[in-house]
Length: 168
Image (cartoon, rainbow, N blue to C red; front, side, top):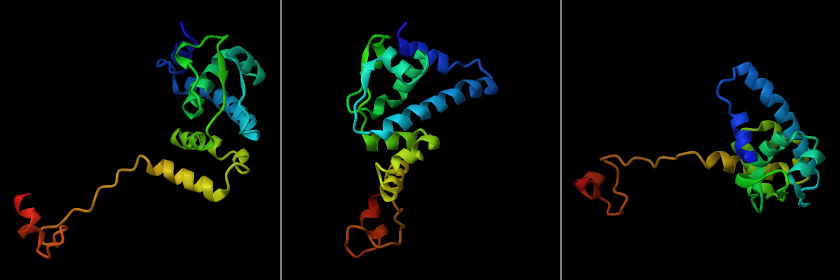
């Protein structure tokens, strides 16, 4: 079984109780935060190594690090082959800073996108802009409905019901 499949079956176990789920995810999120603190301290460095080497470097169990790779993969400049990776697969952690920040907002990972390590990377205004852009990306804005007695949007000067709305 590939590492990613093993991680996903472990992480998304459906027979766990809420308490067991919390006991599984709390340590994961703490370790994830620690790795991001280290990566964001030097954001322009591309860290690379085998899955096993990087797990050891960041002090994580192999499966936990596979979960980290699954989470960061969409934010990488060059995504890793996570579907077929094994312990000895070489991976790189060169990430797109804006994409990473937005993906953290998308995942509702406030403990990650509010890390103090973001401050030297993006000023407060940029972080706020990126946050708003990501939140607005999934907001559906319906256009204002044209009323029957409103002026026609075609610019004819007639009421909508006597112009373009006649055939609607």
